[in-house]
Image 1 (cartoon, one colour):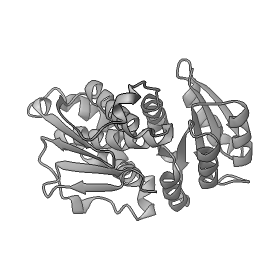
Image 2: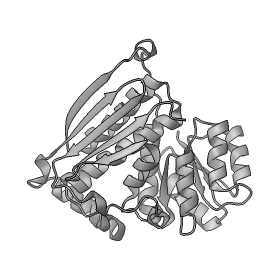
Image 3: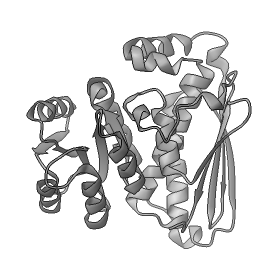
Length: 296
């Protein structure tokens, strides 16, 4: 039964988030008003996810992320962002938060984001006696444009890298989130050629058009190629779609905190926050995510 602790000093926002969460079968939501109370609550009553506003009393969102990473590394933290909190949120993502949702998009994005975080954070067993002896591992997949295949592939790659490097739950989750966002971009903006601006302006229309194009030619026959090269020190994951590509220079500036409140560019922001390097090819239909182990 997934448990979510909501941290926000706004009673209206607490009720909104709790209502969205408690509508999901088997999910529970608890609420507190400040960071100190949140930390005490998690230590006494463990939860799977802490959903926190950035501007909260006693201990801001960034300080709460750092404290939870230190005291409860198994707990995933998802941020709620609003205008004025963007710079703090970027720092919190870099400090260990698992994802974020703009407050203005809670109704559309909160539950899908929490579902992805919960799925990516699920415990996975492995044969540690073998993976610790890894020298090099290379795998390549050619996958249909189908979320039912892409999301398990994302979690599988998260498990492979996490097991090989004995990563904690938070680091596994961050890698899984970055890979997932890259796969979603390849699907929606690459193979289905959906304008990212539409996601910002009319999310329902974006989803409807995605469903429509998934049944039409040429979109339905396009594939996504995913390659992993893993060594004891570096994980390189390359994701290539069959779409026409785009100009990588047109991506939102990841250093501009004004972009954090937009759904457009959200995936790229998370990829760059969670991975050591992110590179696009000249055509824009291929991205390579690089993670260095023991980079401190």
